[in-house]
Image (cartoon, rainbow, N blue to C red):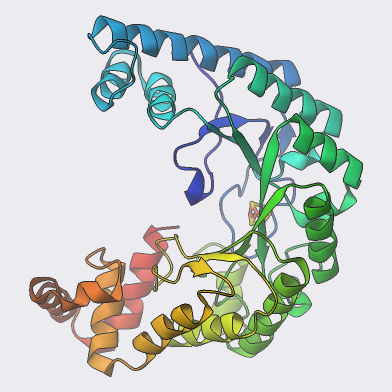
Amino acid sequence: MFIEQGPIRPPSEADSLLIRVTRNCPWNKCAFCKTFKGEQFSRRPIEDVLADVDTVSRVSGQVQQLSREMGRDGIITADVVHEAGARHGHLHYHVGAWLYNGSKNVFLQDANSLLLKTDDLVRIVKYICQVLPAVERITTYARADTAARKKVHELTALREAGLNRIHMGMESGSDQVLKLIQKGVTAAQLEEAGRKIKAAGISICWYVMPGLGGRQYSREHALETAARINAINPEHVRLRTLTVLKGTPLHDLMTSGVFEPLDEDEIVAEIRLLIESLQGVTTRLVSDHILNLLQELEGKLPDDRDRLLGIIDRYQTLPEAEKTNFQVGRRAGVYRFLDDMREPNRYRHVEALLRDMGGKGNLKKHLESIRRKFV
Ligand code: SF4
């Protein structure tokens, strides 16, 4: 058995069932993005999507039957998931893992599901809830220009059908930065999309890309992004620090000197300015991407504002040698949090890595190369 699935999902949807409703990205021009390069956008036939939902239902039944055969009484344990994958392959493993995690969450792929006609998307979302009754949360990616074109009553119909959250690559709230990176979206469209999504009662998660304005627009990037967040008060803002990938237009801009990337410390300072500039919002800030230097930068505003700024202060006031050690340790996967540096064995291990890299002179090149592997 087979269902079609796309290549990406948000980090927070790691436990979700992935149902592909469109293929690839209809825009495909953002200067930093390689995800769908060379791939054509298309809408999947609705009947094919519904058939995938039926297949998931059948596979769920088979995994539960396997659990009974293994003496687990229909309960999906980790060994049932592994056995399902070993016997039947990836789909059974994926569905088994989804059942193991409670079978509550579904993510609709790929980059811009709202491009479907509202009636078609409503039909898909309702069908998922009908065939997979344990589902409580259905989320998807959408571009701001597409969401801004929807009527509030259309978005409301989607929420009533069961669509709970829209993940949106905001990247920046600055028109200059959005233009630089060819986002094809304006700050006004971001706000319009945000207002409509919230008016429909759908939760919104904006992805912000620290470093995206380069040295030239860093300040404007932070301030204008904060201004959009202040205007909309999205439920979530997720940080996903820029890494400039070879083969992207942004890499060409960087090599020609038009785009000057920020170093790790400048990015931390930019994030500080962003957080300092948030006012009157109850947004939860999340830093759950491996590309972010300070993963512990997570909390709900306004209550956690001072704590978040304190984490940044703590990093910024480290001696240079410790900052370097933390950057290398974080990128090498030795550290997650600043406190991890206090463990002598880990610290010494990172110092050895740093020596192997040839010292601080080669640091920038090594850190960039490690970061590129995570994109
Ligand atoms: S809209 Fe998203 S998927 Fe499409 S090119 Fe831009 S960043 Fe990539």
